[in-house]
Structures are given as C-alpha cells and as structure tokens.
Amino acid sequence: KAGVTQTPRYLIKTRGQQVTLSCSPISGHRSVSWYQQTPGQGLQFLFEYFSETQRNKGNFPGRFSGRQFSNSRSEMNVSTLELGDSALYLCASSFRSGGSSYNEQFFGPGTRLTVL
Amino acid sequence: LAKTTQPISMDSYEGQEVNITCSHNNIATNDYITWYQQFPSQGPRFIIQGYKTKVTNEVASLFIPADRKSSTLSLPRVSLSDTAVYYCLVGVQNTNAGKSTFGDGTTLTVKP
Image (cartoon, rainbow over all chains, first blue to last red; front, side, top):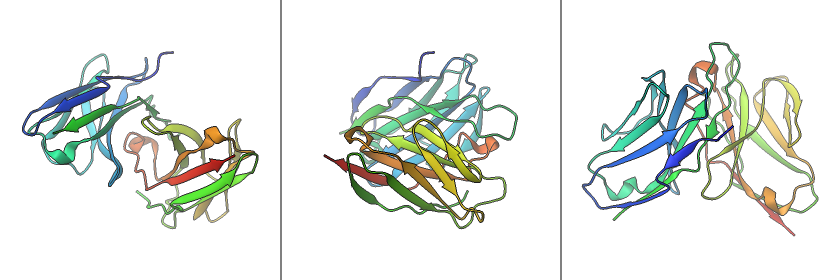
C-alpha cells in the first residue's frame, strides 16, 4: 500500500504571498490531519478533516485553512505568509473507524516551507 | 487532552536497553498511551500503543503501571539507527485520533 504523499516537498515563498500544500492519504483512510513543526514550538496540530468536513481545529490564525475532497485528498492554504510560518508541514492520515480503539496516524514526509 | 512530561534528552550506547519514561498525571479513563518515533526531516512513525499493563511488539515494549499516571517505553538492544526523537501521546481517543497533542519529545542519541 502506498504511504501518505505530500507535494511539494520543498517550497520557498516571500512574505505576503500565499501557498497551497497538498496531501494524498493512504488508500481507504478518510481522516487527514495537518501539523506544523518548528524548532521552537515543536509539533503543533493545525486541523483535521474527515469526510470533507473539518472535525478538529488547533490554535492557529484564520490565515491557515484547509479542505478535503471527496477522494479524501486534502489541501491546506496559508495566506499572507509571515516569516514565522517557515516550518515543516506534516500531513497524517488514519482510518478513523467509529469504534473506541485508537487509530494510528500515518505521517507523510512533509513539505518544508521557507518564507523569505 | 492530558499533558505529558518526558526527559528532553537521553544518551545510550549500542546494544544497551533504553527506557524512556513519560508522566501523564491527568490521564482519563478512556485514554490510550501512544509512542511515536521521528527521524530528522521525516514525519513521526507509530511505535506502540497501550492502555494498561504491558504491551510488546517487534520493535518495543510499553510498561504501564496500575495507576496509569506514567508509562515507560523500552527499546531492547538499541543501535545507531534508533537515534531519533520519541514522543509520548496521551488522551488520543478515537474521536480525537486526528488531533494528536505532541509534547516536546525525548531526543535519544545512541553512541557506538
């Protein structure tokens, strides 16, 4: 089974621009989560999408948004980029069944965004 | 979601057993304990998950005492390739599985 894929792997933007990152989950997984990882703040949860609906949201400003398509692929968008948005953006997918057991998250390799 | 506390860093030598302890005093009744491993410039990778007592898989063991206020990840006979950051997660129920709260993690350095 193919793993989680993210595109692009590397991106350089300037302040004020906007960026769109893409994530393709593992086949059959309907939950996609996004995380931001920086040396200073560590791994922080951005949001989760399940069946095209945002189910959970972290504490990030409205400049960070996302969406999920009917094939479970997800995109996240960051508008009006700031220097502090430079980070590794990770996408994770999980099966997310309706039961009470934990559903392991499978992470992609990430997109390294640099804002100049 | 329960807060976790782990040592910031640990050093070990090849062939030794490494135990990383995580404190989670506010763990809820329905919470699971999960450990992830992350190598530089890669996404975290699931290692092991448990609810109580002991869980073992081909990679590691997880020891959870009866009060569940802490847990210990045990890596047998580590090698240089086990050098990574290890994260302990607690409070990740199914309904919040997609909203994992990662703490600061423990940077394990394995030396030859």
